[in-house]
Length: 89
Image (tube, rainbow, N blue to C red):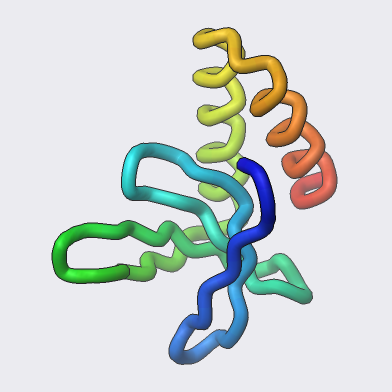
């Protein structure tokens, strides 16, 4: 989770990476409003963008937080906890 990652969505413009959720799957949001969320999946065919609701995005980040806490990755947990607070509260 070091550094910032951006993608250019063909319709919605610049997206900001919130966090990695799983291997090859990340959560992005629109850069300025942070109202539209996308699951971005990377595979051999390239990138795919799946729009998801704010509540689904929040649930996904909370699941990732639980996973980081279980594996004991305290630095990543603290960084994601801050992102969660800034994005959803």
